[in-house]
Length: 246
Ligand code: 13P
Image (cartoon, rainbow, N blue to C red):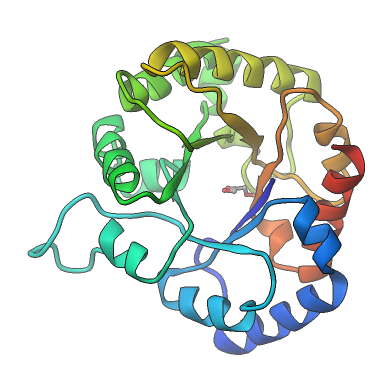
């Protein structure tokens, strides 16, 4: 499974060009083979839905709010559901760091997505200091337990995104990522009441050049792609690498 996180990028003209290139470079066989999703800004969700109407592509949001009514600026899970949004990214490190999302807030967002039947992509990851201090597993366990403990879930994807690898061109060793993903699966199984086994995808400076080395690993079930997804041809090359290897 390959997901695009567009962050604060995109315009009407750019999305028209991007979807044109994307549809030219993909076909039904590829999109039936690989689960593909795109998370643009809220205001571009419907445009993507219209332009990719005939293609098997999921459209998601980059965040969700946990409340209703008097919360100016926010978008609820029921509003997303109304637009048939398929998935929602929560816990991205940029939202944790720039907008102070705590694990407690992320747990509320998680719950509202589950009750509205929107698939969460829960992002977790350690900072560079935590990585250097060999705290990675401890940090990830805390992020997972505080959101998932006691949950009974049927569909949730975990995105492992080391904060220091996002947009930096630096990536961890693929073997290490594989071991971390295996550990994440164990933790999610023990945190959830129904021993849920999640797909775990990797994000952080993944591109068409390094994608296949990640996808060759047993426990890496795909990617959440940032910068490299903004070019339709690069994004499709990543999807094709995934389809070749998996
Ligand atoms: P980059 O692929 O640009 O490093 O971003 C990864 C990311 O943050 C996806 O959510």
